[in-house]
Length: 618
Image 1 (cartoon, rainbow, N blue to C red):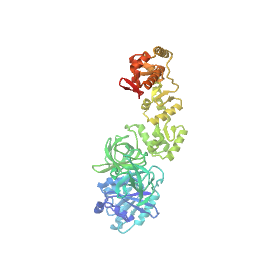
Image 2: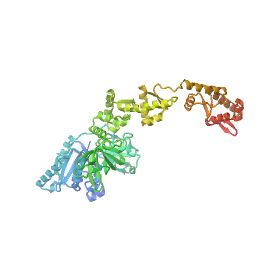
Image 3: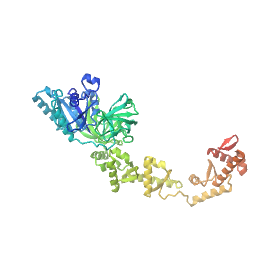
Image 4: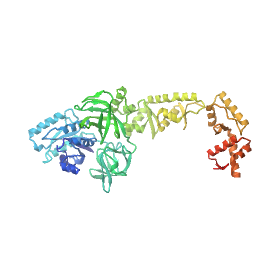
């Protein structure tokens, strides 16, 4: 499937030509038909002599409606540049050609309309002027066809030439990739509900699919699909598609939103791209503000120039855009920058990283990385994305790179076999890290672990959450890293702690003697034991191993004594209905302080509860 867009100056006959070719009036709005001027996007379709059916997007030519025009050119395979033979190039012709060139639309036909209104000699002069103006643009060398929508002159020839141009255009994959539908219209049809339209890119859609509207994450289900007003169960990339959605109201969806599958695309407010300015545009300075047009979205942005103080007219450079609102884009998407006053197209570029970190200017490593991404070699892209940084989840990495699993998974296997990438975990939870990244991670982890264990030799290890925060990893990535480090014999870990391999939290001989002395003193007076005079770390170690039981801040019992006391309390309550502090004190010859502390401890553990002066079982 292919999508062809019209472009050209107002009143040069774009909509009239579309109607003559297709029999469909693309001016769908009453105001458009009254004013005989396209205000918003119009759509039609055409069957060519080869039998292929193509979608036609008719875009506005008037300068006031240039933003609507931009919403329609993001998914074009080819363009029809419309020029009235009786007027030739006009201001919007020039701007539309510049936009097509910035978007690198490399397949198209120049259609000279109203050919019946001029003499043959004039038509030839216009043809020569047009050819010279196309020189140096993406449409240089495009075929020129003179037509008259009124008389039918040249229409059959035009259809044949469109067929020939599309023969050279790349086809879209029919069933691969993740579907992405930049939404350029949304409305409601009585009896059906919400409908959105757009040009489907990257993958197929099917009736019944659960989908999401981004960037706001609105869930919906596909109730129906139409391509060229024909219902179907599926829609393929390259189609102009109308999608009937269940679960959403039209007011919840705006032009520029993107329909896709849940969990496959993440909105972004930062873009890295290679930008080219128009030769007649003003210079671009650091932090200048623009209107960004990408897909069907329009959003304000600020620019960071990464490799130039100023981007001069006609120059190219690496830039980072900081967006005022989130958009959904993929690597390779093309975009346009405009200024609102005076209304002017300034530059265009191609996204090389849709989810970059914030860059500092004039960094050689940043520019080198962007150039590698722009080159597009799959293994270079993946290795560049990993760099020497922390581990990355494989699914997130492939999505960020716009790399299908059919390419990415075999590539990972090769890189792992070559030792250029280390794989952590097993499907479906797989992460990747470069050898340099793994080395940096262990260098950040092992020395702090050793220092922690020297400081706290009696602790099992560093708290796992502290380790996670030090490494700045998600819980799932941390688990994958700890498991890999354990397999390599570097460390041990459990749900709460992480330690250097071989570490055992045991007191030395002198420390053990002091603990044994304290335990012996407690055993000599088991029901009113002295508070053990121990270092806090040793005390915590003894409590952790069950050598002591704490019942209050400074009161402890030996485990056997504690068990005996609790058993007596339970038995007494069962036999007499309750127990009081004085009974416990008298039974074991202890003091009120110890008896009260034990019963309050059992209250806190919800073994007993206080009723009046006594305790009963909970």
